[in-house]
Image 1 (spheres, rainbow, N blue to C red):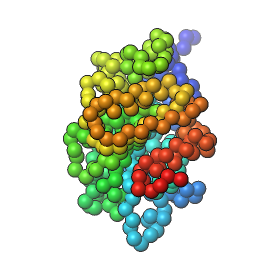
Image 2 (tube, rainbow, N blue to C red):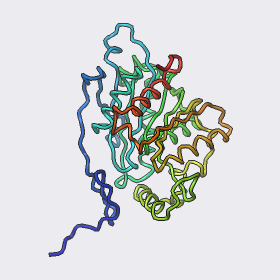
Image 3 (cartoon, rainbow, N blue to C red):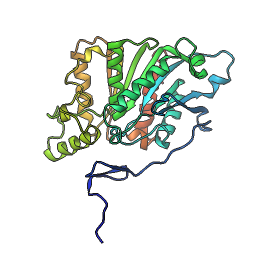
Image 4 (cartoon, one colour):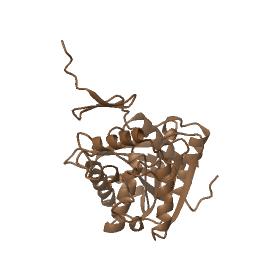
Length: 323
């Protein structure tokens, strides 16, 4: 009897498998509940930010902030997870553990956004969801929002966006939209782009020129955005097409790249193009030697991961000296 299972189009073990019919099989779907993390003393909880889609955020705060009688205002981080727009979740152990560590190190309150993923919800669903999450967060800036942690502890004069890989791509686009629309309640101080998932038809710098490698990456992008007209030069994946980086709605940017990451050259190119765009802010590049894509999520205790964590924490606390 012949198998009725569709033919595999793209196989990325241990992460996902995409079939010729456009369906996806996610191979790692483990999640962990929110709560108090005994290692970092960071508390977390989940809140639905969109009744229409049922999407939620996971909110993190250092326990010492809620136990203090002074109601100290903390910098506010809005974080977007990675996963090629196809996988990943705010509730995954990888992101839950990373946000616990980052919130503890930086002493910030963080919102980790869960967004709808392709191919079930193709581009631009993730960008729409992320913007809706940001607006939900901003609704607390006057102290009258639905979530007390944000009302009492979030400093809306010190808002940061961050993300890794596809999440860094989202952070960039949200920052561009903030710069254009200037929504109430969001004073965007800076963004952190970790190993940003940008691409394009033509290589930049010493980027891989192998047609097979480039075609595979474009194929992956087309699974996330099947109706794309520009392919790898679609403005959602290539930030140098159809938009000006000068409209970025913040004054500080930190771009993190890894030496052995295929996407490294795009991150470096982003820094150079941002400097030439007329944007006028300050951009910094941090490169981890000998490391691969999103290594800091998988090798959390290695020297480079620790250094990156401290760098990002210091970026969100510019008035404090980096140790």
